[in-house]
Image 1 (tube, rainbow, N blue to C red):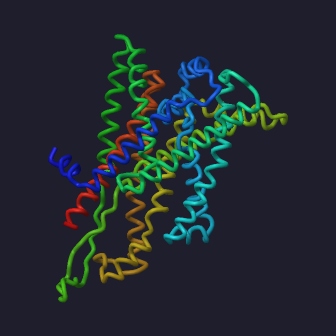
Image 2 (spheres, rainbow, N blue to C red):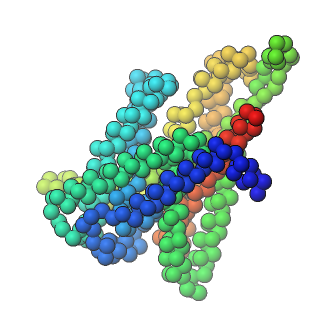
Image 3 (cartoon, one colour):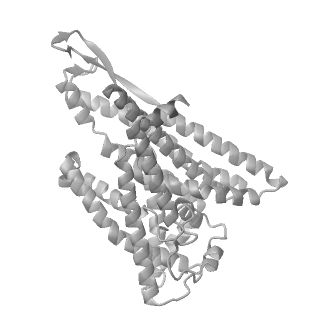
Amino acid sequence: MNTLVRIWKTKEVRNSILFIVAMLIIFRVIAHIPVPGVDAAALKNIFGGDSQFFGLLNIFSGGTLESFSVVAMGVMPYITASIIFQLLGMIIPQVEEMQKEEQGRQKINQWTRLATIPLSFIQAYGLILLLSQQGQFFTNTGITTLLFAIISLTTGTMFLMWIGELISEKNIGNGISILILAGIVAGLPTFFSQSLAVYDRSQLISLIAFVVMAIVTVVAIVVMNEAQRNIPVQYARAVRGSRLSGAVSSHIPLRLNMGGVIPIIFAISIVLFPTVIAQFFLGAKTEFLRDAATWILQVFQNQAIYGGLYFTLVFVFAYFYTAVIFHPDQVAENIQKQGGFIPGIRPGKQTAEYIGWVVNRLLFTGALFLALIAVLPIVIQQFTGNASLVIGGTSILIIVAVVIDSIKQIEAQMTMREYEI
């Protein structure tokens, strides 16, 4: 309670939080504006089944997909564009150099925004085709209705991207992650009511398994986000005022899970993207393309293949995102410039190699742990037969990680202002 009072009394932090709340309210208001020409009854029938794929799409859109609102695609096209440019940074040296400079990062961010527009068009068209395979949900089937729907969905995505960037500027958390969190939280009441409605006394064990899974997921994510390895650093001398003092000991904190929730978001984007693209080729004139599209859809409906791919992507993206945000060479260079060294390790190249070795060991444990937690609901589903467990587990995973990250950033803001005072 004292912490909440301190936050409220700190004007800058209070205003930032109120601004984010206002943006989320706007997001949820827009989420109830449907694309013109949509048949609500037909959409309800499409999402009334037990499809895990449609359930994932709907829960991450905060229920906006079920009503086919103008923000039904959420920020997934923007995330896809971000993944593309981060991959290019590992392939093209010029892009990698741009990522190291502030001006270069700003240019890449601008390219990412521009790339989001065509990706939104593609994913909007793919989403409409995907839902059309389940049944006609437009009152009119003309080209004008289709084009207007694609433009509306693209505009909604760009608006959410803009809101997400405004939220990120307040330094209370990642704006895109907070929007995804808001969508999940908004869909949880409906999710829980539907999940509890299918239970009876004979399924008590399934309900208990779901509750245990939720608790285990929450505890595991909290432990994983708080765990860190401290690398000791010795500084030969320290400047205090106008005098030099003796040696000073410090440490470099390395988190077990450096990527936070980003690997999960990236993995979900990649898992959903092939199924959307495959919809383009179901009606292709070339038999090979039709067969390939059908095969892709059948593969992603297989729980074992879906779970294995999801596990692998989370594991790989945990390494990938850490490689993007953490550079052992730069850390070693900064330590050397400040006159520091790791005991028993020579400054320079050996220090960078040692830090990289430690990070890789931590990453293996953190990435494996994160991937196991991600697929845990799928494993439990095999024993309970309830597809909604997959959605609930993934939602809890993102909620906990985003909340912890936001709390840490708020604490950092408070600490910074205490020092200023």
